Image (cartoon, rainbow, N blue to C red; front, top):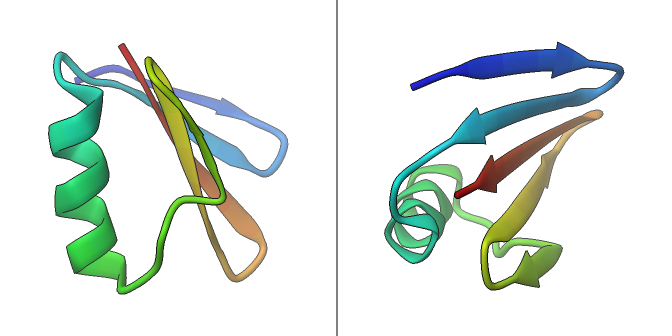
Length: 53
């Protein structure tokens, strides 16, 4: 898994965005605030976690 740091977002490249969305949603206890097929993002405190295919 590759991670890019930029500003206030951690961007993770994952092979299956829907599976990552479910797993991280359960882990963080929040729903994604952006959800567009090949990309979703969660906001936790002041950090965004983005998952992209």
